[in-house]
Amino acid sequence: MKTAIGHLTYCTNIHPGESWGDHFAQLKKFIPAIKQQVSPDQPFGIGLRLANTASLELSREEHLKAFQQWLKENDCYVFTMNGFPYGGFHNIVVKDQVHAPDWTNADRVAYTIRLFRILAALLPAGMEGGVSTNPLTYKFWCNRCEEEKNSFTESATLNMLLVLEQLVRIHRSGGPLMHLDVEPEPDGLMENTSEYISWYFDELLPAGIPFIKEKFDVDDQEAADIIKNHIQLCYDVCHFALVYEAPQRVLERLHHYGLKVGKLQISAALKADMPANTAARKEVTDAFRRFNEPVYLHQVIARKKDGNFIHYPDLPQALADEDNPEVTEWRSHFHVPVFLDQFGILQSTQEDIKQVLALQRQQPFTAHLEVETYTWDVLPPELKQEMSLSVSRELNWIKAQA
Image (tube, rainbow, N blue to C red):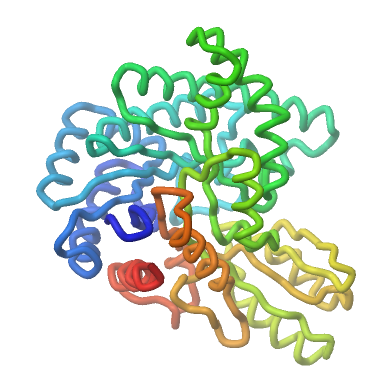
């Protein structure tokens, strides 16, 4: 829906269904009720997530036309898509497989191009669109040596240029402007602003400028501008809070380098100070233990007394080190409801959301805002409500911040 701070939606990765028929059934079940509670009198935007199987099925003309008709009848539109998880995302162990296939794999390229072709058919006239994606690969898949990491990065970047070429061709042939929104996260090959900027200027532009020049007969500056328009950042607030990066600092650095934000994913992580007292610390770690579930990765980044950090690849590894006297704070990658800032003795990084929305109000840096709390199925029981009520509460909380 159009708000004072941009088009606002939620990501449908919270709804199960890896086939299009199953996922469409979920959209039909929940979206009309959510729209009634948050956007009864204006069009409601959808942040669509399609598994690979669903994307193949929705690419069929009869399915796409039926979906377009449903959107029209229900006063809805699609303006952004989540292309990070390729396969199953519910009722299976996801963990690091959320990155598979990574950007070194041709299946990731074909899937992403397919999503963009679907999005181009769904976008309202005159509106730009975006598809978010994973940060090239999972860091632990290519960390045996620097040479291996460089090889992964080069291969992944060259594959991403194949998607870029298609986006430019679609736009130059009269189609919409669409951008691939790269989403850093803990233990991705890119997990913070510095790594994203380094990749952009050390890998993407050096490979992309000659590629675009050859394909489209443009000069260096126009090629760089094309890349910056079509490959942007997905700013997931939870992820940047986990790496202890303040919103204003993130946006200042992106602005300094002339890089754009394609989508703001509004999400919150768990955090807590770690008391020196043994009993008090045990209370905190026991509270985190309640969020230790087997489906998703819940990376923990701990701040130490000396200002340095310890990175734990998942919550069990952090819990195994719960008595570390050097640690003063934990932040855990567990997307908790954005409208709450307290979870018993734990807190959320909700303040980062408030700060980034205030910055968006002052000087808009993106047109797309998407709430992404995908953990409803695995939250502790007392935090669960009926799905449409939960989503509506999140969206209405964001609207109130605007």
